[in-house]
Length: 175
Image (cartoon, rainbow, N blue to C red; front, side, top):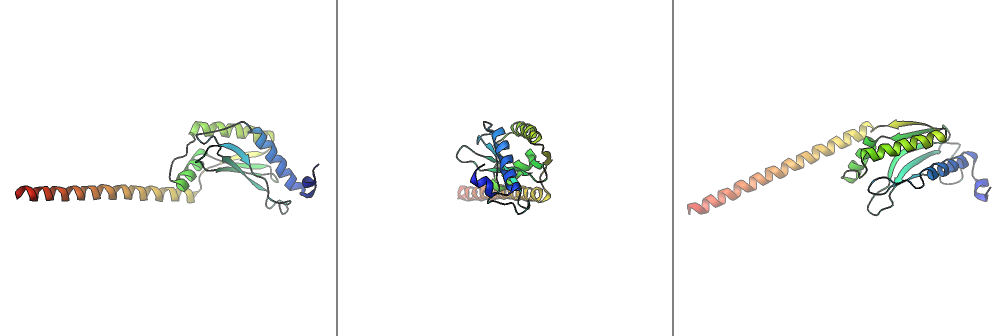
């Protein structure tokens, strides 16, 4: 046992062991255009405040430039539970935050979820799926309305400019 392990509390050590196991389970696994790899975070410091800070984030971390890390779930080592975000949840979060589509296909993400289920089961964690929350759905809807309004404004501006050009041509043609 290392000196650091001796300093950490039992729950913090457990969280580090869970992260090690899950990260090793995904060691050579990559997904999507960003070649994202799976990473479970570990608690900072030597204690989880009696388990209150035991929640660990499951992320997809890109190995290619130009892509952002994505939070795809959480793991709670105290409760032996995990929440894995659905494809819709991750894709919407990405679209709202970065204003562009996620470069992971639904089938690629489903493969990741199946592998995550196997690894969580091996760790004796009960994993459940979490869809997009109401706030995210509302934010995405407002972005779609704004994009729709901007597109319509461009069309109207184009029509107005066209009509002005036609009027100028007619005026010069009449002499």
